[in-house]
Length: 99
Image 1 (cartoon, helix red, strand yellow):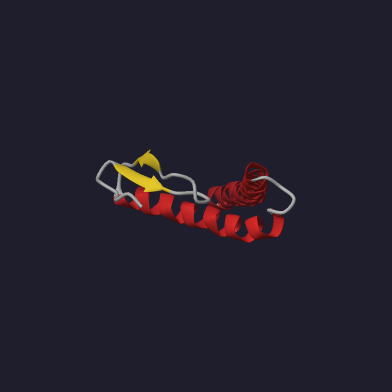
Image 2: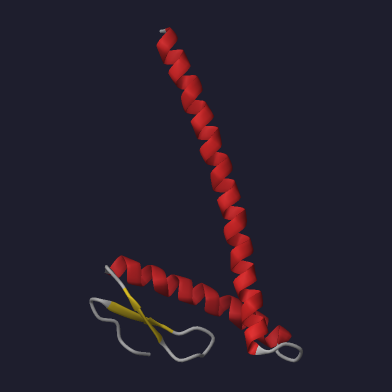
């Protein structure tokens, strides 16, 4: 693997050639590597299971779909929590105004 520097980090997904990514901080580079690890983990689970019947591109499409599905579920949960907090804040404001 290619070493990181102050402005660039490298990720390698599913055994493909390393990809350079511009980064603004070490924290950002660390986050990219966590994401890289997660994708490679799911790839490692799916590839042996499906490689007899699907191409690498199709398996990567399954991996991408899994992450999109998880993102959607997380976004819906966050949106619901945000709406709840908004309503809570409005009720709290009403209580404070009455005092």
